[in-house]
Image (cartoon, rainbow, N blue to C red; front, side, top):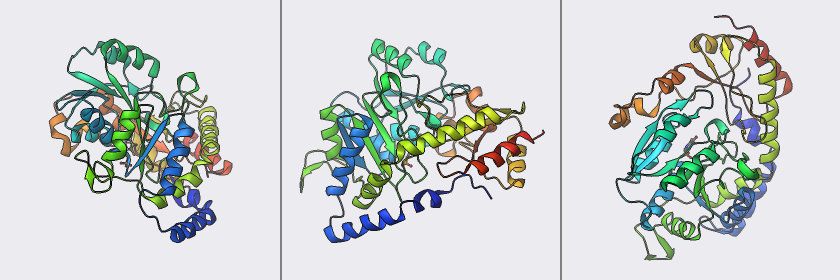
Length: 368
Ligand SMILES: *Cc1c(COP(=O)(O)O)cnc(C)c1O
């Protein structure tokens, strides 16, 4: 069986180092906001090329705390609108909503899985104050276009980089360093994944960084003195220690993902299967390799028969979710279609060449 994602094999590579980190953790006795966290924050800021990194509880909170920080600094206020691509994970929308802001969704371009740039350029609503591009599937958003528009219209730009750790965008800058602030998730399945929940904000804005460092810890910089009405969302010491270990191999792992993606791209020839556009220059780190197929369920079943696991990202778009009925007035035919046709193939840095061969053969033998 080739699993869609073999997390155990990914993490087994580090079992010895994790055990050492755990021993150190037990000796040191710091559980929260200790040296492992500050060490990882320093490493990750350096890796992304930003001045600041603030570890938080998860990716959703990373997004939310960016918005909360901007509200404290008067750059956003309750009811301001935030632009999001309709084809994203639900967390992107929820973070905006939970921060008291209003998500405005835009149609997708099915070729890039990102904003339809004509729709984006046509946006002209003075209540929109921020743009939240998602580097979906690991592919960096079209930041050049986004920056020109944002500067013209005075928008804040916040990256949802939860799927794009290590991707390199314009001017050789990494995801996380391509906007005013960025949110990362270290959910176990991500390219840089913890052994539990985790997240981080990266930014070059000292005021925002300071504010989020307080907000994640009850709004406090000094114990029992609360400057802000804050939250409890801290990246814990153990996860920070594990992440610091895995960060050292992130570039190598991403390079392996790109090699696998390139093989899928070069060797899958099946008119029934639409491959993602080729992008192997490092600006796509293939968190997911997503194909499209008119009869997705049949393709999924065909692969299952060949003992190949797959997944769907995502079966239902945010504006069709039961829990987000306030968005149900939106109509995005391309986004909705995409959610019916996308299928995520096995993709991970621990896949062997033989496993990749088998997936390619199975894809090529599929008939509708
Ligand atoms: C995973 C993910 C998040 C949320 O991260 P959590 O750590 O699960 O809260 C947000 N946005 C995108 C695009 C994601 O893939």
